[in-house]
Length: 122
Image 1 (cartoon, helix red, strand yellow):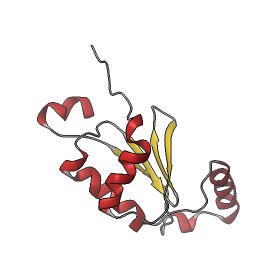
Image 2 (cartoon, rainbow, N blue to C red; image 1 turned 45 degrees about the vertical axis):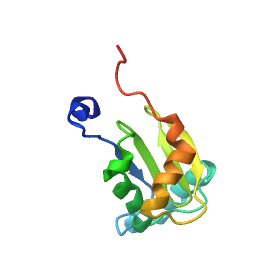
Image 3 (tube, rainbow, N blue to C red; image 1 turned 180 degrees about the horizontal axis):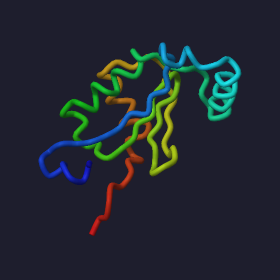
């Protein structure tokens, strides 16, 4: 989709959120423990909240993010990541809660230089 609509000035990105919600609260305790163990192994110290995910969604909808297209941004808890196709490639540590203004700076300073190529370049 990113390739199809960029000619109209439209960017297409995805967010891979990692947050506790009412839906994740219904996960059985043993499954949740295994999931949390895997996250700890991946360097995640805590899960996020929907409120912590929202600034990235807002930023990606702004004109200031026009330089980002065809990307998957992982966000949650203390981890901001850029996913390569199909694995995580860039990572940044969130030192504080993001707001829209800092989401722009965090993305550019931590994973912005690792944006993934989209489609063929020929």
